[in-house]
Length: 338
Image 1 (cartoon, rainbow, N blue to C red):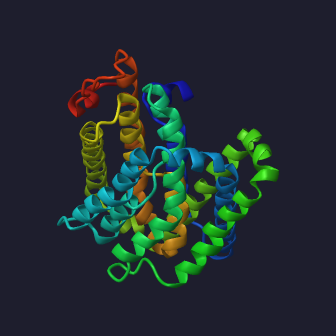
Image 2 (cartoon, rainbow, N blue to C red):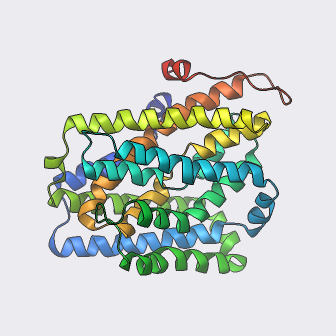
């Protein structure tokens, strides 16, 4: 089954996420089970950010500062260009306000870590810079994403309140800082426990997805979202990703980055983190809103994996040209591969 998903460029984890959505749609948590599931989801978020803090190397922060032009460009694309595009999407007619807010929310999120680094390595880019850029993006996202949500979403759709500041500090920031402070004692052990970390990391997100969609289903999510709106989310996600991929490629050439750094800019600058987005949505929005909020993120996440896998393979197959601009890979060609 895994080989089939691999050939189709479908992440098996996405299949598990869809399974959670189906399960939540058929058997949503109610009553005392909803309280228990919600408590477990909150605990999972705390553990998740604690581990993120323990895994972040201080040396990565120091090394990353030396390549500030590249990291600053990635940050601007992630936290300025993407949100501007999100505002444009939210202003489009015929888009349900809750789903439009979900599209805007995904543009406010930090970049991924694992897939950004993996695609950069596959494309023969600057892996060390990718590690730093992706790590900085996730670290900054803990502070920047809630602030952007407060500025761009609060008051219009009722998704963010002042109470969320305390919740963010307790569930996200404090666990992250605690993990990072304890890194000298537990960091090496956590890095060695890859299977356990993967189970906790992915399991906590699956639980949040189940509780979030379950609460949304109880509130009538699927009676409010039509097939046309789902198709629109998929189309908007694909267009959004295509625009950012083209823009990051152009910026890399404009700023004179070498081939390896242009690859970092393209893959780190175009990603949005499902691992960070789902827990943050659970903290920032009410239970009845979270299902619709993270639905666009799930579509975008799978599309970015599929399209960037195609681009990374094409870049990796190009001959080494360290001092020249690599031939452009057009979106039309990428879209016809596999």
